[in-house]
Structures are given as C-alpha cells and as structure tokens.
Image 1 (tube, one colour):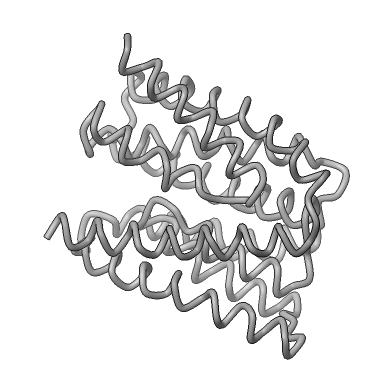
Image 2 (cartoon, rainbow, N blue to C red):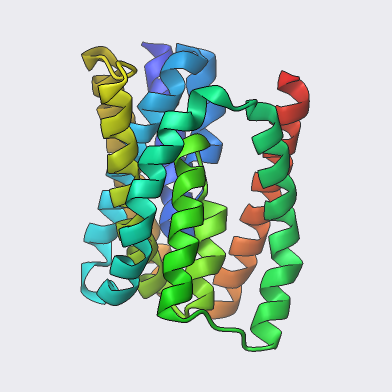
Length: 243
C-alpha cells in the first residue's frame, strides 16, 4: 500500500511538471515504477499512463490545438511507433539510451541557435520529424525532449504547443499500447496499474495548467532547457548503470 501511495505521489508531481513543460513525466516516474513493479511491467504500465497524461493535456488546452500540425506529425508518427514497438526486443537498450542522452543535451545549444536564426519547420518537415520520433517512441520510453524542439521550431508556444504535442503523442502511445497488447505484454493487471498511475498524472496536469497561464515565454523556454539536460544525463546514467 505504501508503494502505491508513493507511486501516486510521484505521479501527481510528474503530471504537474509535464503539464507545465510538455514532457518529463516518464523520466520522473520510470525509476519509481521499475523499483516497485520490476522493469518488465514498468514499460507497459508507463505506456498506459502516458496515454492518460497526454489525453489530460489535450483536454486542458483543447481550444488551442493546431490540428494541421497534429495531422502532419501523426500521419507518419503512428505507423512508425508501431514499427518501433515491434523492434523494441531486438536492440541493445543501452546504446539507444546513450544516443538519446547525448542528443537531448546537444538539443539545448541547437535549440537556441535555431531560435536566434529564426529557424522554422514547414508542415512537410514536421511530418518527417513525426516518422523519426514515432519510431523512437516505439523503442524507448520517453521521446518528449525530441518532439518538444520539433513543435517549437514549427512555431508553437505555451498552450498551443502543449496541446498539439500532447495530441500527437497520444495517438503514438495508443499505437504502442495496442502493439504491447497484441504481443502479450499487457495483461489486465498491468493495464489497471497503468490506469491508476495515469489518473495521478492527469490530476497533476490540470494543476500544472494554472502555472503555464502565469508563466512568461522566457521562463517556459528555460524550463524546457533544464528538462533536456536532466533527461539527457538521466539516460546516460541509466545506460552506464545498466551496462
């Protein structure tokens, strides 16, 4: 019982943070889930919880979703995520963690360079990003720090960014959950645990909305940078630790 309460408390905090930044809940929650339920159960539990967390962000910012950006990203992203989930078992995970960890950290200076040079992604380029990030979403647990720069380079900020990124991630994770189910990695007990964790993430997201409304654009960007660095370092640490 204590373990469940601790997981739910971390879920609430993770929901608040991802509700403000647009990502980060998986990075905070996964170590806690692995410790309490083991790595085999943690990934599908988190996949169900991620569906619910993204759904709550869409509901919180429903009016400002950029549906064209969502369609462009998802049309390539969903089939790529299904393909990624299928290849999950064949790749050495620590190499993926190292690659993504270095990429996340490198994204901080790259993001600022792109912003300074006013670099923008066109709709068709966003669709290419959807395919690449979708495939990685199928393989690893959190690609939020990858989709964040893609949607911000397209020109979305604050509520529009949070809702559109969440709507796109939602359909990617639904594809991933259905693939897990098909491959026998989603028994009912795991699905119910995912719903429970997802409920705490949803509650946190709506609390986070109040902070975003008050936050300046500059503070929002700084929080994104901090998350990219923390995400990158945690992935590198996990890769070294596991190996």
